[in-house]
Image (cartoon, rainbow, N blue to C red):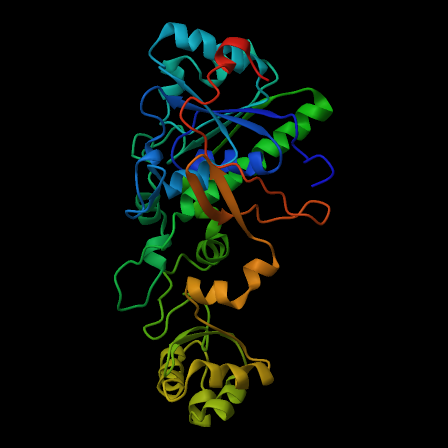
Amino acid sequence: MTSPLPLSGLKVLDFSQFLAGPYCALKLADLGADVVKVERAGLGDLSRYLYLTDTKIGGESTIFHAINRNKRSVAVDLKSEDDKARLRKLVEGADVILQNFRPGVMERLGFGYEAVRKINPSVVYGTVTGYGSEGPWVDLPGQDLLAQARSGVMWLSGGANDGPVAMGLPVADVLAGSSLAHGVLALLYRRATQGIGGMVETSLIEVLADLQFELLTTWLNDGRRTPKRSANNPAHAYLAAPYGVYETANGHIAIAMGKLELLAQITGIDPATAALDAFEHRDRIKAALAERLKTADSGAWMEKFVAADIWAAPVMDWNGVIESGVLQTLDMVQDIARGEVAMQTTKLPLRIDGTRPASGRAAPELGDANTLLERGWG
């Protein structure tokens, strides 16, 4: 970009590890912030070595580079008083501090909000936990899959005859990081306009509750009747036919909206079936649609659906998404590099003044910015 990024000059000290907190820091870094990652001396962030698969580049996991690109690193021993004293120099000059340890850990280390605020009264302090800082689940491990299980998200996914279905990505971590970034930016605005710092907190359970706000609102106001998941082609517990995912002769198609009478004409299902109440008889209607949709391939059905303004889409894998060209058109993929590390990853999902911010800098080497511990920010 030719104009400065909106967060240029912002100094972020990131104590967080693995995903939720570092995802927040990544969004701030992409918007121009100088993010310095605090890691354990000799070991670093666990995600340096924790592989999603056996994929590694330059001896480090791809997930580490995905989450921590465009940052710097200081390696310290948080049990060493000398290292903590040097780290306090960075705390004093930081605009934002992030952490996602279990409640009480940062306080024991001497870098909880109250301790930090004495050093830096106007600091913006961001915290992510699993289940909040108090309550019956406060000491439980804040891990994405476990949070999905406890939140209702896992139970809600799948069909009536299925067991619970986990989402195929760390949705709680990503949502928590995004929510924390929102809160940090809000507090930065308050500091800019009123001179007041503050602390923003979120948790995996909070963002998963927010993710379900539509369905939870319905449930809270209809006598708390537990919704019944569709037995056939499930996609949403509260929505009527044809909403669902259907097998075709060569793949699958998702159908969101469309008049059942029109779908009956296109697919050849019995008009009497299409005339039934779309919620009360949704499994019967879906079963009839499913039987017909298997008789032709996805391309043939999509041509008819598009012509009839039926809201449908082919179910694509990543090859299909890339081959479509949509991510390339939107400039959502970038190359990053550092020494022997060279890889591709995604970009920030927004544009500033018409341009998508990007940086070719991969995740940092452990302790690559340790000189900051001696001379401070710069």
